Image (tube, rainbow, N blue to C red):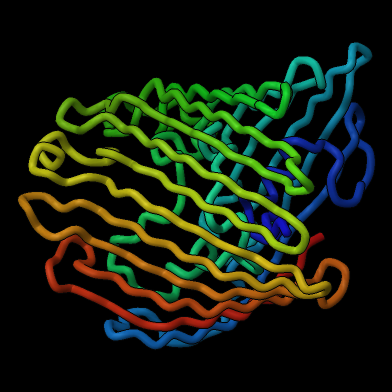
Length: 366
């Protein structure tokens, strides 16, 4: 089972990136074919926690995205496309989420030019890769449970994010594929001609990944290694660096996956790093089972952030049970219950929180 298609914007981007023809065609442009896809989610949630600074229950339209692809092909076998992911929710403060161009062929591989995640993000494998629904701890969990600023999530590209970059992904050779990205300035995206060179973002960011996929005795297995690093523009700030590994396997109705990443000193000053602080590391694992029309999964997430001057680490733990089922074509019902614990939130010794949250989601995709 692979529930990546329900993991929101990241999955929407992944589909667009490697398949110019997606969803339903809405017409033909002057020079390229046009395709349209999108997702809307409506959720109900309830949470019980010791330190309840967030709303304990509510309704939310927590996502509205529209993806447009214009694609074409040349006589020499190359395909190319323009990809745009628009934010359509009434609460969004910006119009665009991602905008990039892809150029590629079976023999050459694929290039991405524009504002999109790096090779480290594209190749990452985490425990959420095996989870049903919205992926438990990889979904809206941190919006419901109050981690007090200590939540670091499950990302592998904290240096570049969706900044403007150029990426290359090779064709698969004997199961191996490599990817690399270069981001001149991690703070520059879109029409950012006014980006400063001294505002603390990262420059000359290099991101790389290696993916291996194969079929072994009827099981589909994948493993990846990713890395990203860049220099901070401010001399008093530490350089950015992140490394991650992960693996997954699917056999019969069962999928298992696990991942680990370390953000080293990313986002810290040199003084904080010298005093023993770090940007944190995380691990996650998941197992999913397909029961015909239903999917169910169990996931575990744990992270630790080192605090300066010998203060105890800030730690987070989340255990989630998730399920989903297709109500009708394009309409998925998902639900998850998560048991969470946060210790020494925000680096404050003794500031702890523990609780349980439930999120039920209707997900419409077209």
